Every structure is written in structure tokens, then in C-alpha cells.
Length: 241
Image (cartoon, rainbow, N blue to C red):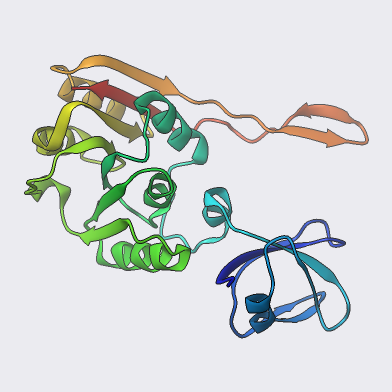
């Protein structure tokens, strides 16, 4: 039975709505009775009361990134991709995450890893992240309202991801939680934070800092060119114990 769905307009420029199979969706193309989704399969077509059709798709992590409610600026998919690729994150990994924000990174990682424990010190952010994780339906992601600098854990984690201001202190706080051969990956919007992260990781091996530049191509009547949107978001520093 469908609980979450991405509705993509067939005739209205691929307009999208992330919905649950309850209540009604009111759009400029008409109203959809979302209860009917419970009787459909992904890939089906559902129509508004005005006859406009939407394709019913199963939401994936990038869809949740675009449509979930946010409390701040989440790490971008391209930066999360760097972390996944260079740590070899897999289905057997235990992940410690800090600086949860809206829970976007935790949700991406939770779709891959065995378990994710994510720390967020801000009450409102932690509440929103927990709601988002519940909305997605992941049962292997735990949102902890607390300060990562005060972490006490008997668990060893294979991958630790950090997206917060006090990056040096955070790295020193979680070092003892890392399994032998595990990875710490930190996201830093500024050079100075990247320097701080590298200093705190000086005892580690294979320390690498990346800047992932992403430019979308624009196709128009006048021609094709890269989008003018700035592709820089920050720096990802990865080190292995």
C-alpha cells in the first residue's frame, strides 16, 4: 500500500508534489483525492477532478531533499555524494552524524547504512528532523537532541559525518567513537573551518579535502550554456583512522 508518493504532472511542466495517501491535494490543475493512492501501485496515473493527470512515483532521497520542510541550509547532495563515495559507506555501517539540521543528510545516509545516530543541539531543529525522518518512514535513523561535544557512547561507528561550527572540538569529541579503519567526514563552508578540521585530524591517515563544483546545463532557444548559479557550497574533509 502506498503511504508516500511523488506526484508528477504530465501536462503541467513536470510540477511535483510530495504527498501522503490521506486527505486531498489542491492544485491549480484541480483536486486529487489522495486516499485513492492506497489502491494504486507506483507508476500509476491519477487524475484531478478537472481531468489533469499526474504520475505516481515512489519518492527517493533527492525528492525528499527538494520537498521536505527545512530549518536551515542542508548539506547538498553533491557533497553527500563525495562522502558516500570516498568512505565506501555501505549497508553494514553504523554512522554517527552531528549537526542534523532538518535531517536531510541523515535521511540520505539512512537509505544506505545499517543505522544512523544523528545529534542536534537545537530543540526546534531536532524536532523537525525527527518529523522528517518519520515522514520518510526510515526506522534505522535515530535523532538525538543533544550536544555532540558531550557524547558518551559505547558504540563504535564506521563513518562519522559532521556539519557544525565547532568542527575542531567536534572532531576531538568523537575520535574515540570511531572504529579502527573508520572515516570521519566534515563539511565546512569556509576555508578557515577546513583548516581547523585538518588540524584536528592531524593524527589520522589519508586526509583529503574536496571542493565539489556542480554546474547544471541550461538548454534554451538561444543556445546551451552552464547555469550562472554558483556551484560552490563548501569543503568536505575526509580522514581515516
